[in-house]
Length: 544
Image (cartoon, rainbow, N blue to C red):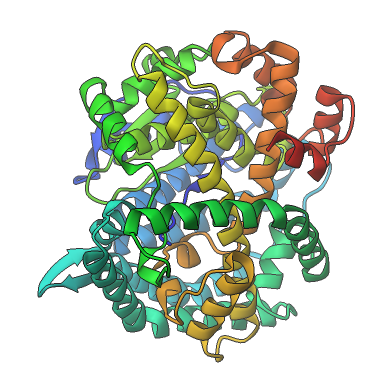
């Protein structure tokens, strides 16, 4: 049931500065500090009463320091980097809160007036959040370092997840699951402590729970609307889910030669033999090289973006992290990836490149307040759609055997439906965990998976091993919506332009009709312009 999450950060607009892109290994963060410091070359000391151009330079210096610190903390997970990130964010806040800078900041933001929080209130909030952030950091490090034990040997969670995904030995699978459960038991209390701290902070702001706080502040909705949407969507897709699980369970029974599936039989990736064949091919060509080729077929020149300093790849072989970070919206993007040369990483790279192309496609003319993706759903949908093309349109048949691709494609669609059903279970579990963190969460985990997947998982604290609950809280429901939209966007584009993988105009079309508009238009308006109508859940069901 392991889930690899994506951290999607899209930064605000910043005046253009050029720099040379490089590949880095994250064992030493000094090269990263150096390259990002170069962004602000020539920036003068802060002059509070300078003209607008001087303010832009000063603002850039503070903003780049903040972005550098934030990104370094994300890629190093170092405690001091985390504290430095908090300090740089506070310094940035102090600068833009200065009375003499506010008018220019409003001008940059494209608004007449912006509410500025008192500096001393900011500092008090900084101190209040500091202990929570340090505690969260230490807990996350504990989770990432925690290892399971199989046959007396310590084994990483990553290796355990590989056994669960690919190994067909029932005895070994049971040991892998049991090791996962023990890891969960050892860290569940730490996660609950963070949940309670988050709740306490949210309740001080008059919210019922942290879940409600995020729904309101990040997704502009409330618990009632959220649950109505979840229930409506799940009921509409339930027949598709049931069919996918039925077919998957039949395959598992055949593989394991049993009439009764146990918890340790679940989550084997069907078609793992075909995927091994694809992995061998990827190892010869390189995952990044293949991802570049896929994007070139759609009109995106990844090598050019790298050479111009607009796209940076950071290599992290040890942590298996994969995420996009917008250093400068419309200008510079960074992708952190594990760089493992397997087929799964091709899909991951294509996903993160989707986020990067969106970020780089934002128009320079947009004000700061609009220089971001149309919505969190839209940017995720773009990333999902562009990564799915590898199988949806069986791309690169000159590299991959088409018969293998077709088999993997069929299994992929079933896997997506199963994962979507699990997403319903996870997001409802998370909501109820925040509403009552003192309840039996192992039993709640079992109940939610029984309801949304129909499977008889045993009660366990496996939920605690998902770093998602710490790194990307209240995000899974966004992925559900994005998956639905991704299918629909592809349908629109195919009707207008044909197969995406065979048309170099795709990049131009996406830039002109989605990326460049940023948040200047709503998601629904953009879809209406492209499709001539509002999209519905029925469109997705028909596409399935």
